[in-house]
Image (tube, rainbow, N blue to C red; front, side, top):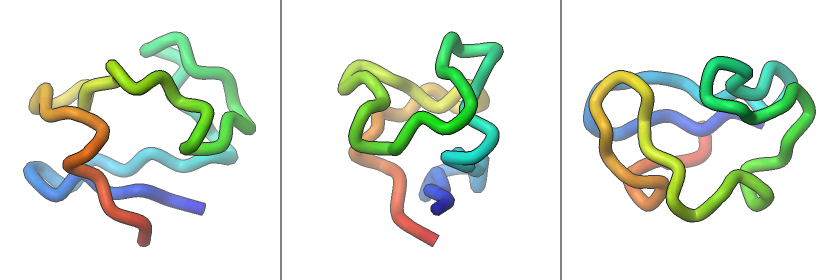
Length: 51
């Protein structure tokens, strides 16, 4: 599943994770830390929506 930042359009893909942010490939969105912020624009996890 993919989650899209509503502010800038950056996509978190559960299959790919976000290795540059310390999130391993295969990490489900509900296991991404609550303090995660978009690496492009800095908004919080609550600003992402499922694609």
